Image (cartoon, rainbow, N blue to C red):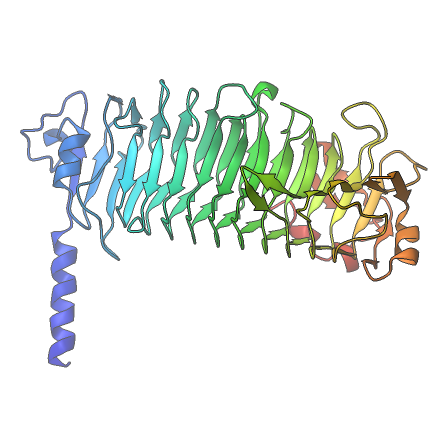
Length: 455
């Protein structure tokens, strides 16, 4: 063994040996105690914030910790995170907060928060805040987080990167209004973060949003829904230059009932991948690629890939491609999706499987101008038997409808390899999108990847 290797091993051993476990008990603890056991626990989280060093763990006993905040005085290090966790078999509740949040990881890295109930009974800007370029490699996992009077229970912002929100329940935020309340927000250049396997519900605006240049994030394996239609906003929103994000393997259902414009997934940005998502029982649109000016800024859906998604029972159209003013949704690829329309839309009239909307463009676009968008190997089906015209083009001269065979005959460069057929889902109303053995896409072709749609 070389001298350098020996020194490294000694240093690593010293770091491991220095890691300690401390306890906080808001009922029976005392900050004058050493905090090294459940019987000698500290009383306050503030004591733990000041004392914890890299590698240390703080176990919180059951109870309500009011008007306090998780805010470690220092960061952890790679392999030696600072951890705040629930004592085994108990669920401590942290409520009230300070300075606008309850978990404050501003410019902090390598901090883990696990198994806590974090709840704000009064209005806060956020409940969990991870912010700043130095806020990296933090992990919030297995927590119950809510903020009924606020705007966003979880915020990752200001170029924070490589953080993870995993296995949490994030819920009940906003004011029962269309414009407020998102469960998880990636904002102001947040990048390379992961939001995975969470259950997000009852947000009035959207369940998960990436905005203002938040790119290269992963939104995967989450469930997004509403248990109360008064809180039923959108699912995923990608807006204002938040490009190159992955939205993969999510289940989005029973949303979009606040207005007739809410989408399960709305994309106003470029080069994102939307794959293997299941969207069903949504009051308005399923997946929507939209381009329009907002707040003096251009936002355009360009070069996105929408692949192997299942869309069923949307109150309006499962697919919407929208362009306004001089902003154009272009060069997107919609490939190998199962798209099932509903008999009637929000207004009780015909609901097409897809609308390609150029009506609001400043320079009129004639039907058949697809702006480089390609639709390939999809299955389209209307649940009202014999309904003609799967796709509607809304333009300045009125509306035009086509069936899938007509589209492929007239516009073979943009539409190819798709079919009109019943996919024969096992139980779509309950979100079971397994295919019956007699399905026209079972076992291969368009349906080759469908086994993962309901994962």
